Image 1 (cartoon, rainbow, N blue to C red):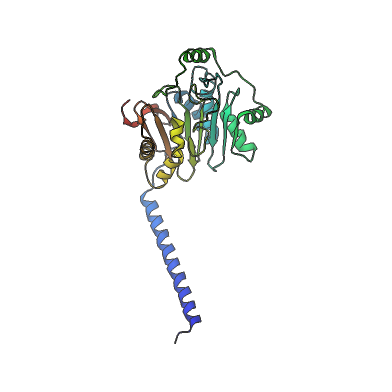
Image 2: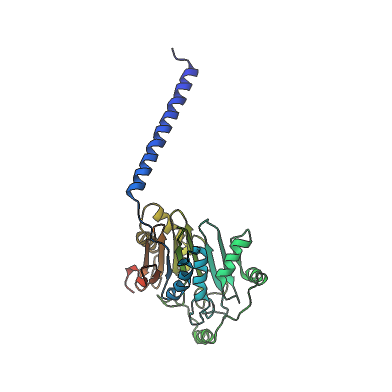
Amino acid sequence: MKTRRNFIKLSALGSVGLVANSALANNNDLNDESFKNQKKIAKPIVISTWDHGMAANEAAWKILANKGLALDAVEAGVRVTESDPNNSSVGLGGLPDRDGFVTLDACIMDQHNNCGAVAFLQDIENPISVARKVMEDTNHVMMVGEGAQQFALKKGFKKVNLLTNESKKNWEKWKENSKYQPQINSENHDTIGMLALDEKGNLSGACTTSGMAYKLHGRVGDSPIIGAGLFVDNEVGAACATGVGEAVIRISGSAIVVELMRNGMSPEDACKEAVKRVIKKHKNIENLQVGFIALNKYGETGGYSVYSGFNYASHTHDHNKMIDAKFYREE
């Protein structure tokens, strides 16, 4: 006759056996699956949004080709765009808000999930480098406004007048009617987002913008928000967004793309699904352009947008080119 104590012992032993068998089965499944799905990793690689990504990728590639870190590459890459006075959507020369102030947003993220961001930053040419300082020199993730500027100045950054004559002239012309209307694929909301996979197989990303032209003073979009404008998970992949930031924030867009890749989707399919979610969450998508790009651990890339016209730059050992992203609707 079994006693209660013997019953408990037998039950415990049985449970241990079940757990062990289950773990062994799972390990075998994982090993089999890993064996079946082994892929050659294409590295290094860097991708970035829009045609200004070509020059940015060149700077990033110099680092990656010399076996440098993805983190260093993405910072160096987007700094090129930030410092280009002829680009009216990022950094120096960016179009101002409706009060005439150029305000900048940026974030950066490395393979360890360390991240830093600045928002509503004024008079500093390279916000991406300030964001990296926030990541590496503080316990914080995001700093904003006057506090972010003070931090930058203490770190040795110099004040710069970001409002170029051309951007000022365009702003003054806009003031004649003062009507804000997003324009599909125009430079009134075109971020540069950059993702890189280095020789060691590590991912990093950066995202920087001057935001929507003629926005309300104080407006911040998705670009400095980890999980919206940018997300990196070194086990899976990385993603970034461009376009109307409010729409990206509403679905935590870049984090969604990465999670979809975690669940087995290709980079392109993950971007497409995120775009479908954007569309589903908005009753009216007229002039609402959003695009995503993604890079997984194998060096596979993809992009997708609401409207046609979105493209991204890609640089590997084998190519240096622009890629037209697939889209939901013709412009």
